[in-house]
Image 1 (cartoon, one colour):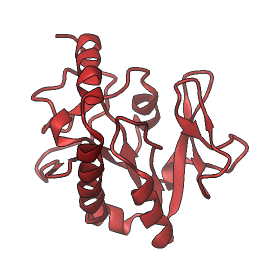
Image 2: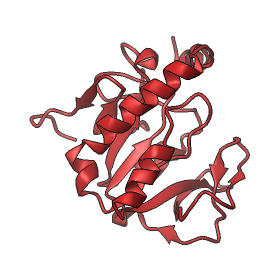
Image 3: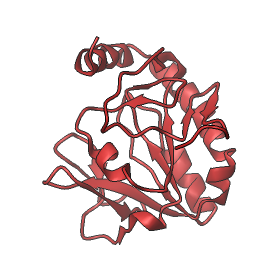
Image 4: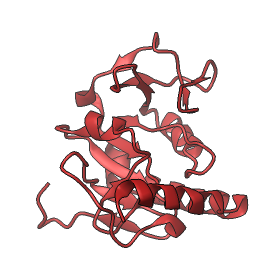
Length: 190
């Protein structure tokens, strides 16, 4: 099955997850994220604002504020590129063409080299740190050739056995579900 077909099947599967499961799983993902040494050490965290069928990120954002970490979120540009913009609060957010909430672009942007830790969305991921995104390639383009610690969060019920990839797909440093944390072994190279 190619990525396009897999993504379509996975989106159908995600729509069938009930709210109770997603809420409980999101809490488990939150606990696993905030326990990561890389998160604890991070000064600037890049996160996405979740949609209905994705793990919730608001609690992670709130924890960042509590720990006085700088928080930035993606803003998609017309040229299929993306920038990180400071998120001061949840006011003034507007939906982009994909229905994802974003702060105004007039807010302060953050250079990639200042970001320590990134929480990346996925439709699914696997134990070998591969993810399948939503298909537009924004994150793969943004994250390529960076030293940002990349974590994709995924519901356990949405994990896959093997995600097909191509040369443009960026491997994650860590996959976090409500029950497990999958990390690159020290002996593996980036």
